[in-house]
Each structure stands twice: as C-alpha cells, then as structure tokens.
Image 1 (tube, helix red, strand yellow):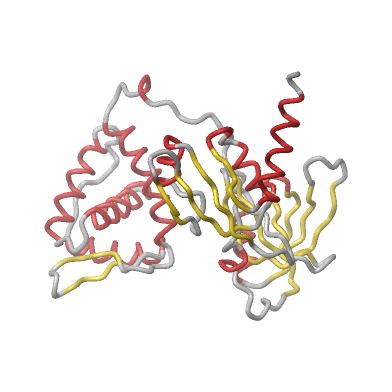
Image 2: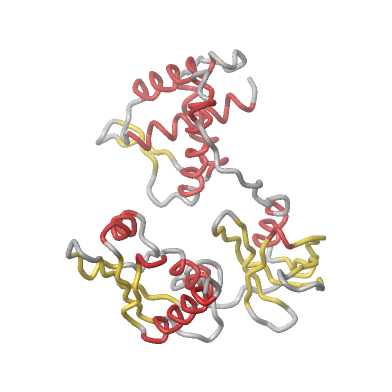
Length: 306
C-alpha cells in the first residue's frame, strides 16, 4: 500500500472524530470506506479495505505521526480525540489542506471555480534541522541578511522555537553576540549548521509568555504591554468580532454604531501596520500616544497626494 493511502486514511479518521466525537468503529469504518471510494475515482492505487485490526494499528500510528491520541470511552461507547494532545493544532492545519485536496480529487472540472492565492511556497527547507537543534539543545550557526541592509552577518544562536506569522516562518533564538532574544526570518537565513556545542535552556523562560502580548513576531526587550481601546465602524466591527485581532481582545461595547474593543499588547511596527490597514474604519481611543502616531502617519500619507 502506498504512503499516500496510509496518510489519507489517518486524516479521514481524524476528520471523522473531529466532526463526531465518540464515534463507534462501525461509524468510522463506514465513513473511511466511503471517502476512500470517492478518492479512488481519481487514484486507483488507493486501497479501500478497512478492518478493526487496521483501525487499531492506525490509532497507534496517528499518535506517532501526528502526536494525537485517540482513546476509547466505555461510557460513551465510542472513540474520540484526547483533548490537549500535543499535535492537535498541527493536525487541524493538515486537515484543512487535506480537505482542499480531497475536494479537488473527488470531482473533476472544478478548476474554473477554485482560485488559489498566488504566493510563493513557505521557506521550510531548514525547519527539520532547526527542530532537531531545538529539541537537542544544540547551538545553530547561519548567515543572516536583514532587509534594508546590504551586509550579511554570521550568527550563532540558542534556538528556542519556530513561529509562523503572515505566511512566513521565524526562528526565536538568543543571539550569542549580544545575549538578546530575537526573531530571524527563515527566508533570510542561509548556510545553517547545527553545532556540537549545547546550551542550557533559560530557567523560567516560556515561549508562550514571551509572545503573550505580541502582535506578530516583534517582542520588545524590556518594554511593557499597554492597554489599548479601539473603536471600529459597524461593518468592520463584525469582522473583528468574528476574527479577533489578538487573544487578549475583549468587547467593551457594541452599540450598532461602533464596536469598542480592548487589547493588551506591545505597540510594535507589526501592530501599527495592522491598524493602518483598516484606514478610516478604526479609531484609537487609548492610549493617546498611539492615536497621535497614527494621526502623524495618516497626515504624512495625505501630504504625498497634495
């Protein structure tokens, strides 16, 4: 059986248990066989057979491959995904991609109706080696080119984590040169080498806490997050409520004429650019310093057209 068939079956099982927790084996079997039959219309190499023994083996492999645990509940008489599985977010992302793949392969003649975003692929060539360095606490060396600067520089860092933001991947690491924790864009990183020398992970450091009040990947060293209140137009407010700007977002009021939300964030270039993207659909209530910064940027932009 091809690797594609195995992975397809794993994802179908996860999809079924996400949609209907505590499904019985009979329910999972019926769903997997039906979906595999549909996919087989475009790929005859896919094998449709599915048994309880196969399912039990798949459960073990899903735990190894995706880091997602599937457990059986005698009380509910069905299988479900264990909450808090380490790979839960990763497999949900993979399932989104799989759903598109499934739709494209289950029917033909859909090309005129599907328009993908035209963007270059992620810069993921070095992710595997970086993850190895992170997990094994090994120093990493590379040449880094900063945007806007002509010179490249050799860096030696203590790699802590990888973070994605706006279709780019970044490395969070401590630069051995100045001992500061920084983010490095993977698409500007070259000549990666994992070194034999190890490092001690900083006591009490948490990547989650480091980014808790960040919008994007810029995390000011030493600055404190501030309380921010924004006012959105009714139409834009509906989007902001359905897709919050940040996990700290809280709705203060929604009168139908304006939506007021509160955030607690570092005021960084990333966040400023986000606010500017809303144009006249947003107004900063507090802090006054942020409102003044936006005012000056908008006046500067207006001056270019006068």
